[in-house]
Length: 575
Image (cartoon, rainbow, N blue to C red; front, side):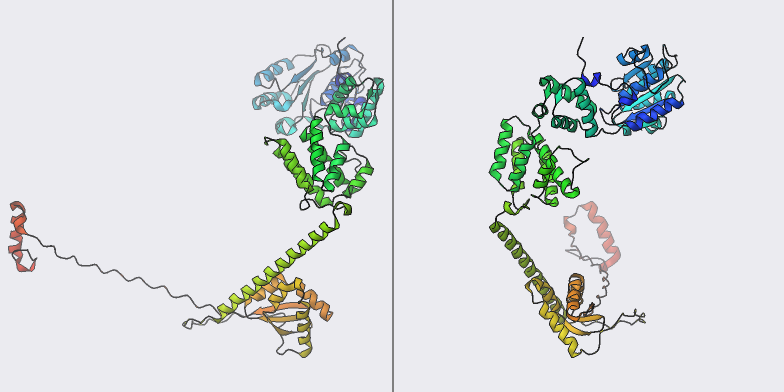
């Protein structure tokens, strides 16, 4: 007898055998029990989650000799024919290869005939989203009003590509991804039934690599069972799947945290000699960093794991980086994986990405032992020098602005006509005006403020405030008067909160800063001048010599000359 693959041999035969889809199996079972059987169903979800298997179970439940029943026996003639694909009443159509309008027209012709052996004719159309627009239109009317003995089951992995007119005529069931624990439990049951032994770590790795699809997990288990001799180990699974392994990833993480670039390059070289794929190396490294990120955020990776790891290792290595650093590292690795698609030398791309993670400026380590004290002090002094340089530049900018403002104020005013004054609009009432005189105790507050601003870190604030003069204070306000509105607005916009904080430290109460400035009014624009009209210029007389002209042209001119007299024109040689 020919060998049957595990995903076919262990395909679920009843609703009880469905893994991870209890919400669907319970709903369909209740519908069959109550007799509320729909004429069209739409099964959507990821691959390997049981859509086609559920469709066949539903077909057996409707046509079983003991049914309709939610628990088909699987032993009667109808159940056996549906299982081996020889039933004349169950049609499984692949829409990827039968996607045209002609195939759907043939289906419409066969729908009208009664079932041969069972109660219902069941049409299972797999990958229905592959049908053309014309085929969907041809199916639409039949799907809306099918014969009473026909049930349509449409299965797809991309439900958004199915037209809304089709979806509205079906009962939709969404299949979800199967969890790692559910897949692992099913694999353990199958391994026990096959009388094999498997390590717990090996089954976990298979369940993780299946990515929510039980069919993929059974295919991997089938391949591992062929390699092993009755015992499936984690090393065999890692070898078959081409996985790098936790030990290599942990070594690389420690090398990056310690900024040991030679060790990182050595690890890459050893992995390449072992036949590992560079893209798989970056993928597993990013998955490990994801586990560290989630562990730092939630304190556990339970129910969120994509890369099976021990919690003790995560607790140790999560201290190497801060959450912000881990997110930057993951982003850099993803950029490298995208660059590998177009790079002529993928190894160079991987080496550049990993060495960039070892640079102190890119990812500074959070472990005290990973960075020498000298490097830490050098980094802190470098940041202090940068802050001091920024403060000096800001102070120079303020001084330059003040110089330009004073130069504009000292410029001579051009004479201008006094414009006709319009009645002034009523001004909005001010919250509180500056006092007429400055009290001695208030002047001491101003001196204390200037003394507080002598700190080099507050040089830009001092350079700006020193351009103004103290105008007094009240119980709730502190007034500074500037020569121009530029410095006043600059102080209010950039340094108001900082100055109010210092004033509260000096006086012990909250004071609201108020800055004012006086600018000279701009001269009125000159009135536009009207353009003068151009005076046409008289043409100069052109001398004419009658002796050089032909006789036929000379005769009319001589007659005109004698007619008009001497006032017409001066002719060369005579008048």
